[in-house]
Image (cartoon, rainbow, N blue to C red; front, side, top):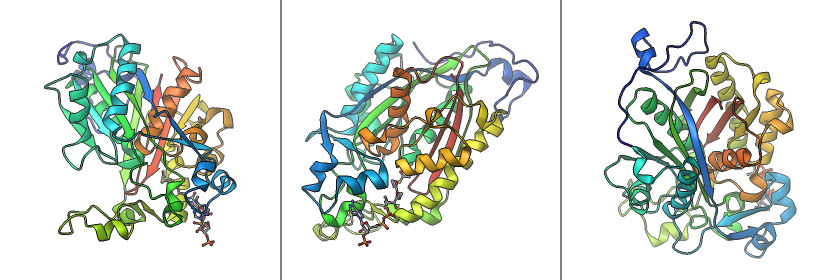
Length: 363
Ligand code: ACO
Protein backbone atom coordinates (compact mmCIF):
# COMPACT_ATOMS: atom_id res chain seq x y z
CA UNK A 1 0.00 0.00 0.00
CA UNK A 2 1.46 3.35 -0.97
CA UNK A 3 1.13 6.84 0.42
CA UNK A 4 -2.33 7.92 1.44
CA UNK A 5 -4.30 9.48 -1.38
CA UNK A 6 -6.82 12.03 -0.25
CA UNK A 7 -10.30 10.81 -0.86
CA UNK A 8 -13.75 11.98 0.15
CA UNK A 9 -14.68 10.68 3.58
CA UNK A 10 -17.79 10.90 5.69
CA UNK A 11 -18.96 14.31 6.85
CA UNK A 12 -19.30 14.39 10.63
CA UNK A 13 -22.81 15.06 11.86
CA UNK A 14 -23.23 18.46 13.49
CA UNK A 15 -22.90 18.11 17.25
CA UNK A 16 -20.86 14.89 17.13
CA UNK A 17 -17.85 14.84 19.44
CA UNK A 18 -15.27 16.56 17.28
CA UNK A 19 -11.56 16.64 17.95
CA UNK A 20 -10.73 20.26 18.72
CA UNK A 21 -7.02 19.75 18.28
CA UNK A 22 -4.26 21.88 16.87
CA UNK A 23 -5.48 21.25 13.30
CA UNK A 24 -8.00 23.79 12.07
CA UNK A 25 -11.13 22.02 10.91
CA UNK A 26 -12.88 23.68 8.00
CA UNK A 27 -16.02 22.22 6.39
CA UNK A 28 -13.83 21.19 3.43
CA UNK A 29 -11.26 19.54 5.68
CA UNK A 30 -14.02 17.69 7.52
CA UNK A 31 -14.74 15.85 4.32
CA UNK A 32 -11.20 14.55 3.88
CA UNK A 33 -9.97 14.13 7.45
CA UNK A 34 -10.31 10.83 9.22
CA UNK A 35 -9.76 10.00 12.84
CA UNK A 36 -6.87 7.69 13.74
CA UNK A 37 -7.67 4.14 14.78
CA UNK A 38 -5.53 1.45 16.34
CA UNK A 39 -5.42 -1.27 13.67
CA UNK A 40 -3.39 -3.74 15.75
CA UNK A 41 -0.87 -4.00 18.58
CA UNK A 42 2.04 -6.32 19.34
CA UNK A 43 4.55 -6.75 22.16
CA UNK A 44 7.76 -8.52 23.03
CA UNK A 45 9.63 -8.78 26.31
CA UNK A 46 13.00 -10.51 26.76
CA UNK A 47 13.00 -14.09 28.06
CA UNK A 48 15.09 -13.38 31.14
CA UNK A 49 12.93 -12.82 34.22
CA UNK A 50 14.67 -10.98 37.07
CA UNK A 51 12.94 -11.25 40.40
CA UNK A 52 13.28 -8.88 43.33
CA UNK A 53 15.04 -11.72 45.16
CA UNK A 54 17.70 -11.85 42.44
CA UNK A 55 18.31 -8.10 42.93
CA UNK A 56 18.87 -8.73 46.65
CA UNK A 57 22.07 -10.49 45.56
CA UNK A 58 23.46 -7.36 43.83
CA UNK A 59 22.57 -4.57 46.27
CA UNK A 60 21.23 -3.78 49.71
CA UNK A 61 17.52 -4.06 48.95
CA UNK A 62 14.65 -6.42 49.67
CA UNK A 63 11.68 -7.92 47.92
CA UNK A 64 9.48 -6.36 50.61
CA UNK A 65 10.90 -2.82 50.08
CA UNK A 66 10.48 -3.01 46.30
CA UNK A 67 6.92 -4.44 46.44
CA UNK A 68 5.79 -2.02 49.09
CA UNK A 69 7.23 1.10 47.38
CA UNK A 70 6.56 0.23 43.74
CA UNK A 71 4.37 -2.89 43.40
CA UNK A 72 7.05 -4.51 41.22
CA UNK A 73 7.67 -8.24 41.64
CA UNK A 74 9.82 -8.97 38.61
CA UNK A 75 11.07 -7.41 35.38
CA UNK A 76 12.71 -8.57 32.15
CA UNK A 77 16.29 -7.93 31.09
CA UNK A 78 17.45 -8.04 27.49
CA UNK A 79 20.20 -10.51 26.54
CA UNK A 80 23.71 -9.33 25.66
CA UNK A 81 23.50 -7.76 22.20
CA UNK A 82 19.70 -7.51 22.27
CA UNK A 83 18.75 -3.88 21.57
CA UNK A 84 15.55 -1.90 21.46
CA UNK A 85 15.30 -2.34 17.69
CA UNK A 86 15.58 -6.16 18.03
CA UNK A 87 12.72 -6.27 20.52
CA UNK A 88 10.66 -3.81 18.48
CA UNK A 89 11.17 -5.92 15.35
CA UNK A 90 9.52 -8.93 17.00
CA UNK A 91 6.70 -6.80 18.43
CA UNK A 92 6.16 -5.27 14.98
CA UNK A 93 6.05 -8.65 13.25
CA UNK A 94 3.38 -9.74 15.72
CA UNK A 95 1.33 -6.59 15.11
CA UNK A 96 1.69 -6.92 11.32
CA UNK A 97 0.50 -10.52 11.51
CA UNK A 98 -2.49 -9.50 13.63
CA UNK A 99 -3.35 -6.79 11.07
CA UNK A 100 -2.81 -9.10 8.08
CA UNK A 101 -0.24 -6.64 6.75
CA UNK A 102 3.28 -6.73 5.34
CA UNK A 103 6.03 -4.41 6.59
CA UNK A 104 6.17 -2.95 3.07
CA UNK A 105 2.68 -1.50 3.65
CA UNK A 106 3.94 0.82 6.42
CA UNK A 107 4.25 4.47 5.38
CA UNK A 108 6.03 5.89 8.41
CA UNK A 109 7.80 4.65 11.51
CA UNK A 110 7.89 6.49 14.85
CA UNK A 111 10.06 5.13 17.66
CA UNK A 112 9.80 6.41 21.22
CA UNK A 113 12.78 5.43 23.39
CA UNK A 114 15.18 6.88 25.96
CA UNK A 115 17.56 3.94 25.54
CA UNK A 116 18.53 4.02 21.86
CA UNK A 117 20.60 1.24 20.32
CA UNK A 118 23.29 3.83 19.60
CA UNK A 119 23.94 7.49 20.36
CA UNK A 120 23.16 8.14 16.68
CA UNK A 121 21.55 7.42 14.28
CA UNK A 122 18.20 6.83 15.93
CA UNK A 123 16.73 3.42 16.69
CA UNK A 124 14.13 3.95 13.93
CA UNK A 125 16.54 3.31 11.08
CA UNK A 126 17.87 0.13 12.70
CA UNK A 127 14.31 -1.11 13.13
CA UNK A 128 13.46 -0.14 9.55
CA UNK A 129 16.45 -2.13 8.26
CA UNK A 130 15.57 -5.16 10.38
CA UNK A 131 12.03 -5.06 9.01
CA UNK A 132 13.46 -5.12 5.48
CA UNK A 133 11.83 -1.80 4.58
CA UNK A 134 13.43 1.12 2.78
CA UNK A 135 12.47 4.68 1.96
CA UNK A 136 9.92 5.41 4.62
CA UNK A 137 10.56 8.15 7.17
CA UNK A 138 11.86 7.04 10.58
CA UNK A 139 11.24 9.49 13.39
CA UNK A 140 12.79 9.01 16.82
CA UNK A 141 11.03 10.58 19.80
CA UNK A 142 12.88 11.44 23.03
CA UNK A 143 10.14 12.02 25.56
CA UNK A 144 10.79 9.19 28.01
CA UNK A 145 7.73 7.89 29.86
CA UNK A 146 5.45 10.17 27.82
CA UNK A 147 7.13 9.12 24.55
CA UNK A 148 4.32 6.89 23.35
CA UNK A 149 1.74 9.67 23.78
CA UNK A 150 4.02 12.23 22.08
CA UNK A 151 4.35 9.70 19.24
CA UNK A 152 0.59 9.20 19.16
CA UNK A 153 0.04 12.95 18.85
CA UNK A 154 2.44 13.14 15.89
CA UNK A 155 1.02 10.01 14.22
CA UNK A 156 -2.52 11.30 14.73
CA UNK A 157 -1.66 14.58 12.99
CA UNK A 158 0.00 12.72 10.10
CA UNK A 159 -3.01 10.45 9.66
CA UNK A 160 -5.66 13.13 10.07
CA UNK A 161 -4.09 15.29 7.42
CA UNK A 162 -3.71 12.32 5.09
CA UNK A 163 0.08 12.55 4.97
CA UNK A 164 0.54 8.90 5.93
CA UNK A 165 -1.95 6.06 5.94
CA UNK A 166 -0.16 3.34 7.93
CA UNK A 167 2.02 4.53 10.82
CA UNK A 168 3.98 2.15 13.03
CA UNK A 169 4.25 3.63 16.54
CA UNK A 170 6.84 1.94 18.74
CA UNK A 171 7.81 2.14 22.41
CA UNK A 172 10.96 0.18 23.20
CA UNK A 173 13.45 0.30 26.07
CA UNK A 174 16.57 -1.49 27.27
CA UNK A 175 17.15 -0.17 30.77
CA UNK A 176 19.22 -3.10 31.99
CA UNK A 177 22.39 -1.75 30.35
CA UNK A 178 22.03 1.70 31.99
CA UNK A 179 21.18 0.85 35.58
CA UNK A 180 23.90 0.25 38.18
CA UNK A 181 23.61 -3.03 40.07
CA UNK A 182 24.96 -1.79 43.39
CA UNK A 183 23.55 -0.12 46.47
CA UNK A 184 24.53 3.28 44.96
CA UNK A 185 22.12 2.72 42.08
CA UNK A 186 19.37 0.89 43.96
CA UNK A 187 16.83 3.72 44.00
CA UNK A 188 16.35 3.38 40.22
CA UNK A 189 17.83 -0.06 39.41
CA UNK A 190 14.91 -1.85 41.05
CA UNK A 191 12.26 0.16 39.19
CA UNK A 192 13.10 -0.21 35.50
CA UNK A 193 12.67 -3.11 33.08
CA UNK A 194 13.14 -3.92 29.38
CA UNK A 195 10.51 -4.51 26.73
CA UNK A 196 8.88 -3.30 23.52
CA UNK A 197 5.41 -2.87 22.10
CA UNK A 198 3.94 -1.28 19.01
CA UNK A 199 0.69 -0.08 17.53
CA UNK A 200 -0.17 0.12 13.85
CA UNK A 201 -2.29 3.21 13.29
CA UNK A 202 -4.38 4.28 10.33
CA UNK A 203 -7.44 6.31 9.32
CA UNK A 204 -10.90 5.03 10.19
CA UNK A 205 -13.92 5.63 7.99
CA UNK A 206 -16.14 5.53 11.09
CA UNK A 207 -16.60 9.12 12.34
CA UNK A 208 -17.46 7.92 15.85
CA UNK A 209 -14.30 5.88 16.47
CA UNK A 210 -10.59 6.48 16.85
CA UNK A 211 -8.42 8.99 18.69
CA UNK A 212 -10.80 11.65 20.01
CA UNK A 213 -8.13 13.77 21.66
CA UNK A 214 -4.45 13.67 22.52
CA UNK A 215 -2.51 16.39 24.32
CA UNK A 216 1.08 16.54 25.55
CA UNK A 217 2.95 18.89 27.88
CA UNK A 218 6.43 19.58 29.24
CA UNK A 219 8.14 21.67 31.92
CA UNK A 220 11.91 21.77 31.45
CA UNK A 221 12.44 23.48 34.81
CA UNK A 222 12.42 19.96 36.23
CA UNK A 223 14.79 18.39 33.67
CA UNK A 224 17.39 17.32 36.23
CA UNK A 225 14.89 15.67 38.59
CA UNK A 226 14.98 12.48 36.55
CA UNK A 227 17.89 12.26 34.16
CA UNK A 228 21.17 10.69 33.14
CA UNK A 229 23.86 13.41 33.39
CA UNK A 230 26.15 11.59 30.94
CA UNK A 231 26.96 10.93 28.13
CA UNK A 232 26.62 14.64 27.54
CA UNK A 233 27.73 16.67 24.53
CA UNK A 234 28.07 19.70 26.80
CA UNK A 235 31.25 17.95 28.03
CA UNK A 236 34.39 17.33 25.99
CA UNK A 237 34.71 14.42 25.56
CA UNK A 238 31.08 13.51 26.07
CA UNK A 239 31.90 10.47 28.21
CA UNK A 240 34.95 9.45 30.27
CA UNK A 241 35.73 6.54 32.55
CA UNK A 242 35.61 9.06 35.45
CA UNK A 243 31.99 9.90 34.56
CA UNK A 244 31.12 6.23 34.48
CA UNK A 245 32.92 5.60 37.79
CA UNK A 246 31.06 8.55 39.34
CA UNK A 247 27.76 6.97 38.31
CA UNK A 248 26.83 9.83 35.96
CA UNK A 249 25.63 7.49 33.21
CA UNK A 250 22.98 5.88 35.40
CA UNK A 251 19.52 7.39 35.97
CA UNK A 252 19.36 9.96 38.77
CA UNK A 253 15.98 10.65 40.29
CA UNK A 254 14.45 12.84 42.96
CA UNK A 255 11.86 10.17 43.68
CA UNK A 256 9.58 12.10 46.00
CA UNK A 257 9.36 15.08 43.64
CA UNK A 258 8.63 12.77 40.71
CA UNK A 259 5.89 11.10 42.75
CA UNK A 260 4.35 14.42 43.78
CA UNK A 261 4.17 15.77 40.23
CA UNK A 262 3.05 12.47 38.69
CA UNK A 263 0.01 12.13 40.94
CA UNK A 264 -1.23 15.60 39.99
CA UNK A 265 -0.24 15.81 36.30
CA UNK A 266 -1.52 12.37 35.28
CA UNK A 267 -5.13 12.89 36.40
CA UNK A 268 -5.10 16.47 35.04
CA UNK A 269 -3.89 15.24 31.63
CA UNK A 270 -6.69 12.69 31.44
CA UNK A 271 -9.35 15.19 32.50
CA UNK A 272 -8.06 17.66 29.88
CA UNK A 273 -8.47 15.24 26.95
CA UNK A 274 -11.85 14.05 28.23
CA UNK A 275 -13.04 17.66 28.26
CA UNK A 276 -11.69 18.21 24.74
CA UNK A 277 -13.55 15.10 23.57
CA UNK A 278 -16.74 16.00 25.42
CA UNK A 279 -16.66 13.02 27.79
CA UNK A 280 -16.40 12.45 31.53
CA UNK A 281 -14.30 10.20 33.76
CA UNK A 282 -17.43 8.17 34.54
CA UNK A 283 -17.84 7.29 30.87
CA UNK A 284 -14.39 5.67 30.64
CA UNK A 285 -14.43 1.90 30.18
CA UNK A 286 -10.68 1.47 30.72
CA UNK A 287 -7.65 3.56 31.60
CA UNK A 288 -4.15 2.59 30.49
CA UNK A 289 -1.72 4.59 32.64
CA UNK A 290 2.03 4.74 32.18
CA UNK A 291 3.24 1.96 34.48
CA UNK A 292 5.52 4.16 36.62
CA UNK A 293 4.79 2.74 39.99
CA UNK A 294 1.82 0.93 41.54
CA UNK A 295 1.37 3.62 44.16
CA UNK A 296 1.27 6.35 41.52
CA UNK A 297 -1.36 4.43 39.51
CA UNK A 298 -3.43 3.85 42.65
CA UNK A 299 -3.23 7.52 43.61
CA UNK A 300 -4.30 8.55 40.08
CA UNK A 301 -7.26 6.12 40.19
CA UNK A 302 -8.29 7.32 43.62
CA UNK A 303 -7.98 10.99 42.65
CA UNK A 304 -10.18 10.46 39.60
CA UNK A 305 -12.63 8.11 41.32
CA UNK A 306 -11.84 5.28 38.89
CA UNK A 307 -12.53 1.76 40.26
CA UNK A 308 -9.63 -0.73 40.31
CA UNK A 309 -11.07 -2.85 37.49
CA UNK A 310 -11.01 0.11 35.11
CA UNK A 311 -7.31 0.90 35.63
CA UNK A 312 -5.06 -1.64 33.91
CA UNK A 313 -1.86 -2.36 35.83
CA UNK A 314 0.85 -4.89 34.92
CA UNK A 315 3.87 -3.25 36.56
CA UNK A 316 4.15 -6.29 38.85
CA UNK A 317 5.57 -8.34 35.95
CA UNK A 318 7.59 -5.83 33.93
CA UNK A 319 8.60 -2.92 36.17
CA UNK A 320 8.70 0.51 34.58
CA UNK A 321 9.47 0.11 30.86
CA UNK A 322 9.20 3.87 30.18
CA UNK A 323 8.08 4.49 26.56
CA UNK A 324 7.11 0.83 26.17
CA UNK A 325 4.91 0.71 29.26
CA UNK A 326 1.69 2.10 27.77
CA UNK A 327 1.75 -0.05 24.59
CA UNK A 328 2.69 -3.18 26.59
CA UNK A 329 -0.19 -2.55 29.00
CA UNK A 330 -2.53 -1.75 26.10
CA UNK A 331 -1.63 -4.94 24.26
CA UNK A 332 -2.08 -7.14 27.33
CA UNK A 333 -5.34 -5.44 28.27
CA UNK A 334 -6.74 -6.08 24.78
CA UNK A 335 -5.52 -9.70 24.84
CA UNK A 336 -7.25 -10.24 28.19
CA UNK A 337 -10.53 -8.85 26.84
CA UNK A 338 -10.31 -5.67 28.90
CA UNK A 339 -10.94 -3.45 25.87
CA UNK A 340 -13.68 -4.12 23.33
CA UNK A 341 -14.82 -2.31 20.22
CA UNK A 342 -16.81 0.77 21.16
CA UNK A 343 -15.14 1.20 24.57
CA UNK A 344 -13.94 4.61 25.68
CA UNK A 345 -10.25 4.20 26.59
CA UNK A 346 -8.14 6.78 28.40
CA UNK A 347 -4.35 7.06 28.48
CA UNK A 348 -2.19 9.12 30.79
CA UNK A 349 1.55 9.41 31.30
CA UNK A 350 4.15 11.37 33.23
CA UNK A 351 7.91 11.21 33.18
CA UNK A 352 11.35 12.69 32.83
CA UNK A 353 11.52 16.19 31.42
CA UNK A 354 9.09 16.62 33.12
CA UNK A 355 6.75 15.59 30.34
CA UNK A 356 3.17 14.43 30.61
CA UNK A 357 0.10 13.91 28.48
CA UNK A 358 -3.19 12.17 27.91
CA UNK A 359 -5.29 10.65 25.16
CA UNK A 360 -8.82 9.38 24.81
CA UNK A 361 -9.80 6.86 22.16
CA UNK A 362 -13.14 5.39 21.12
CA UNK A 363 -12.09 1.81 20.39
N1 ACO B 1 15.95 -0.82 48.44
C1 ACO B 1 16.01 -0.53 49.75
N2 ACO B 1 16.10 0.73 50.22
C2 ACO B 1 16.12 1.72 49.32
C3 ACO B 1 16.05 1.49 47.93
C4 ACO B 1 15.97 0.14 47.51
N3 ACO B 1 15.91 -0.19 46.21
N4 ACO B 1 16.09 2.66 47.29
C5 ACO B 1 16.18 3.62 48.22
N5 ACO B 1 16.20 3.04 49.45
C6 ACO B 1 16.29 3.68 50.75
C7 ACO B 1 16.81 5.08 50.70
O1 ACO B 1 18.23 5.08 50.63
C8 ACO B 1 16.31 5.67 51.99
O2 ACO B 1 17.14 5.24 53.01
P1 ACO B 1 17.46 6.24 54.26
O3 ACO B 1 16.16 6.50 54.91
O4 ACO B 1 18.39 5.41 55.11
O5 ACO B 1 18.09 7.45 53.66
C9 ACO B 1 14.97 4.96 52.16
O6 ACO B 1 14.99 3.81 51.30
C10 ACO B 1 13.80 5.83 51.79
O7 ACO B 1 14.13 6.47 50.57
P2 ACO B 1 13.12 7.43 49.91
O8 ACO B 1 13.65 7.88 48.58
O9 ACO B 1 12.71 8.46 50.88
O10 ACO B 1 11.94 6.40 49.67
P3 ACO B 1 10.49 6.72 49.24
O11 ACO B 1 9.56 6.23 50.26
O12 ACO B 1 10.31 8.09 48.72
O13 ACO B 1 10.35 5.75 47.98
C11 ACO B 1 10.47 5.79 45.59
C12 ACO B 1 11.25 5.87 46.88
C13 ACO B 1 9.86 4.40 45.47
C14 ACO B 1 11.42 6.01 44.44
C15 ACO B 1 9.36 6.86 45.66
O14 ACO B 1 9.91 8.12 45.89
C16 ACO B 1 8.56 6.88 44.44
O15 ACO B 1 7.71 6.05 44.23
N6 ACO B 1 8.82 7.86 43.57
C17 ACO B 1 8.23 7.92 42.25
C18 ACO B 1 9.32 7.66 41.33
C19 ACO B 1 8.99 6.70 40.26
O16 ACO B 1 8.07 5.93 40.28
N7 ACO B 1 9.83 6.75 39.28
C20 ACO B 1 9.67 5.92 38.15
C21 ACO B 1 10.26 6.58 36.99
S1 ACO B 1 9.52 8.11 36.65
C22 ACO B 1 8.12 7.78 35.97
O17 ACO B 1 7.96 6.79 35.34
C23 ACO B 1 7.06 8.73 36.17
